[in-house]
Image (cartoon, rainbow, N blue to C red; front, side):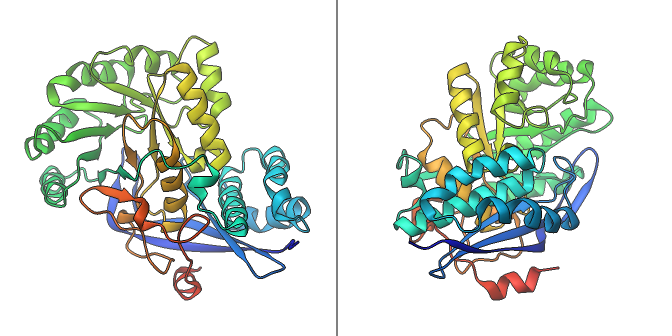
Length: 370
């Protein structure tokens, strides 16, 4: 039986197709890393993590140190059937190192599924659907440019747009939303993400007009610590108000519920949850609590992380809000056949073979390595 013999990490920089502006920053290039696990038969599993400072303070230096201090002792020498169990040690030891936990979880699941010759979605319970919708992401505080991006998204067949908001004056956000909405068909969904930018008063002012504006999802309108306001906003009929920066994993979602502050919806990300097993836990708890999940990635994700999330989305029982899996917002990729969004959909046909369903091209990895 083969055993894990090598663990490698490669920091990368991924240029976005367009800069993304939020209430507190503009991002043109995403900082991330790939993780490669190789067994004694030469079979490899790949994972991905992000150095996104909104969610983690991890760095290239911490990655190198944790690989030697934690990953190698926990995983080297294990057989494929033992690797999933070894993840428990990794999660327990790394705790807040969510990016490395995320990458390790993806790579372990990829390697184990490849060893047994099955797609990851089979390992997760089988197909619940053959395709999932994803959003066109607009992160532009210039109103004319945002409206042009909306027209482009309509032309490409997307069924939903996710628009960044969070200006100092919420009236300007409302005007921007009206402009984008005017460029969209009535049946097309419009989501907005404020990234904690608003005061409670501003959030109530916006959410109170959301339905009339045709907005059906508002992400993290208030500060992450203000769980009660977020939960109260979630009682607004006709719009889902979702926790993002305020809820990372299943334990935090349970904690909100126990405190009487259950959010109406939750944004579920591989990075926040620390990997595939963490996302599965969040989805299970959300289902139990009646919280509507929004399965999402981030601009700058390569097809490695996006494929892992696509496998989850294809196999999870309920996707009431669709997804925001985002390989189409990266200018470059690291796989032989990058995932392709066609008419706003990602499909199972975009995945090939076993594991997460994409084959890493190490020459492409070298081109974006830093």
